[in-house]
Image (cartoon, rainbow, N blue to C red; front, side, top):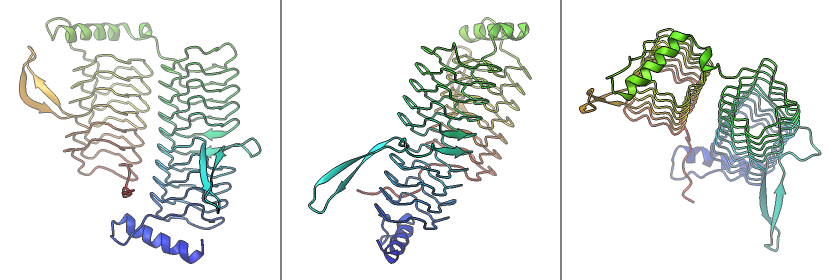
Length: 433
């Protein structure tokens, strides 16, 4: 493909992104783009299947939703690039620079590329993204939340200080890999090989490691709250300084009593027990999965890195609470007050933050609804994938760098909200084909 042809394709692609009738999705499949400077270009949704991009410069290039299946990205520079939902199956990634790149929901599994010869015969080429004869993958400070790396060969790879929240790494070979300081909260590592891997200081709260090989794996100083280690042999694993969930009986007795009485209050619809009044309580790093704290008053509470997956917090008052790094996967927060709370990096995937129906003590509906309040809440770098924010009040909230892909925001108030590099999901046209 000539240079003029490539330029023409890029021009039509820009018009396609704008929805112009004379636009067309860029088809650069198998194109030779080696060493080219494509920095800052808008290539969202472009077709780059099998493209030769070795040593190409793609700094801060927009490649979200792009088809890079089987492409050669060896020694390419993709620092700061946006590769959200990109198809990277079978890509060659020798010495590729992904520093600060966005790889949310990207697919990095191995794959097969089909090509045709002059006689029309079809040929399948197995694509091993990381064959044995190339240096291991190196990724630093990237975002790979919910990326699909199942079955990937990542032995001795460096994926340091990278956000892998909710990533799928089932059956992956991570033996000898360096995952120092990375976030693997709620990630699926079942059956993976982590033999001799380094996860020092990593956050693994809520992660599944069932059946994984953790022989000589270094978990020094790691957050292991609620990690599923079913079938794992921890005999040789290094767990020095690793933090597991605080035992419930280690919590202050008054707090334990308050939580017990609150449970009675919930079960009896207020007839027995007492509504929990736990302003400023320290519940950081506590495993509260599935707990029913609906209606509880937790103003200014410390819940940093707490595990609240599936918890019921309907109409709870968490205003001013510290929830940085907490996991609220699929939690019910309908009608809750989270105003002025700090929720940096919190995982609210598939959580419910819509309005709650107001009812009487007897359970009769009053015909009114109370929306969730997140006024001036700090949600920077939060994971809000598929969350229900219907009619929520997010006035002045900080949603910078947050992931709202698939979020329901009908009727939500976003007045004065900070939306710097907020990910609202696909922003490229859907190809009719």
